Picture 1 (cartoon, rainbow, N blue to C red):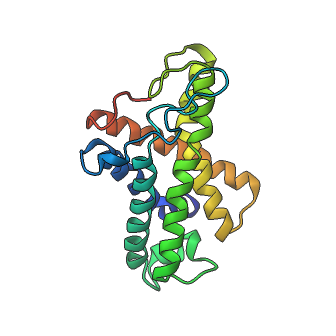
Picture 2 (cartoon, helix red, strand yellow; picture 1 turned 120 degrees about the vertical axis):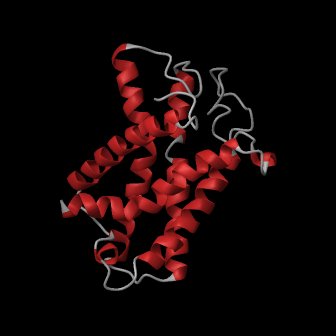
Length: 197
């Protein structure tokens, strides 16, 4: 049970950053950043590289909110607290402001970057951005991948600062993907997502 708690304690800031980033992308503030990261360009197959849903606003939001929530969580994880002793980021490094800014920025960036290969693959298959308009085994695969892609990146950042066995890395990703599914359902019911999966 401690291992599960440690997983959530470690990635709580990036989970909160992901939720806040959805709100950030919905509001009209800084819409000049709402430009697609592929700059509207097509791949050699004539389809968009990533699509309109992957924007600079989303990237900037993930990094900024990653930093904000990691710094705040670092304050909560004061020396001697349960959260401090069960946070993988503080196993080998001190809980300092600069360190928290670094891991917050890296976690937010990894979250955003690791969504891109999934978007690239979906565009190659002609799947509409923001939808899973396919059926059968492909639909199941992409529903899972949509929840797990960013987690692969976030857990990789954890591995950089607190090495772990490969089997634990994949267990961590599975736990993260399951959590992402639950959060997406909640965000859908709060009208922050257009579709549940």
